[in-house]
Image (cartoon, rainbow, N blue to C red; front, side, top):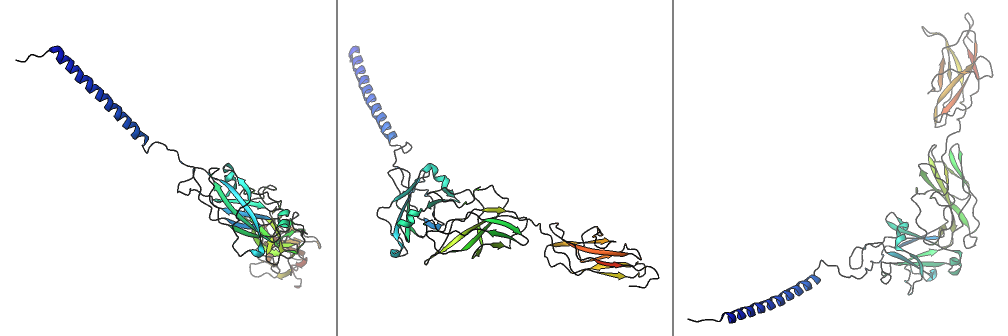
Length: 411
């Protein structure tokens, strides 16, 4: 029989336990480290990313309006690597000039474009209109004098980070020429068949030149009601560079042209509110340039003009027939005016006096039968025309008639 020393066995067991414990602690540490390292590489944890570079603007357009060049384009919404931008980028507008004689129809991108305007990201929404950005570059007299007969060349950049500008936009060019100074004394008056506009023709352009000015383009907008003065409408005042888009207003539509004032809008409808503006046109050898809008005038034409007096009134005696007593019948020529609602017939027993109205309702036809007459009396008749606005015109010439007394020959 083998006899073991209990103390030796105990020491050996303790040694094995201690060894296992040290191994366990080492394994646990290695596993913990592995878990930490694995966690550091987890795709769910945030990682530092470079600021995005916006995609370049590709639809920049430019058009001269008066002495402004109006730029429009859509803002980029994605970065060059396809990420959505989390905020609007700021905008940089660049402008340079090149001689129009050397232009080939496609402006040359400037090597070192000149910065004209910077719009911070927080102000971009002030320039938004119908989903596009609209920026007006107000040309000054010095721009025309320093760059006569020139092409204004524009490019745009955007950026989210100060160090990450987008690439240049497409390049656009506009042949800029000084427009006439805006008209500032436009007036509108209501005439019987038109709204009549009058103004004073300007004598020079913003650059001080005096080219041939005229004809004049007439613009009109139909509105719900007249707005307060300068309530969003163009005033003819020069804009500042990058002026925000104005509040939405009814669009002015060209309705005609005049070689000189006045202009009569014969298509205006009574009771409808309108706004009018006039632009001067300067004729250059290469193109025609319209000025900015004149002061805008609002008017609601009302029909306060009575129709003309009816013509051709006659009175005819009609003898009694059967159960119909003798009476007088009136008739007259149909009014040539287009807005006649009807007629009124008046009777008096005294010559030169209009008397009283005989009909209770407007007479639709130019005729009236007076059944309330007495034999042996003389009556004096006149008629008037009434238009759809309720204006009653002057009386016709007075015509007399009567029913003969009994046993008196028929006149």
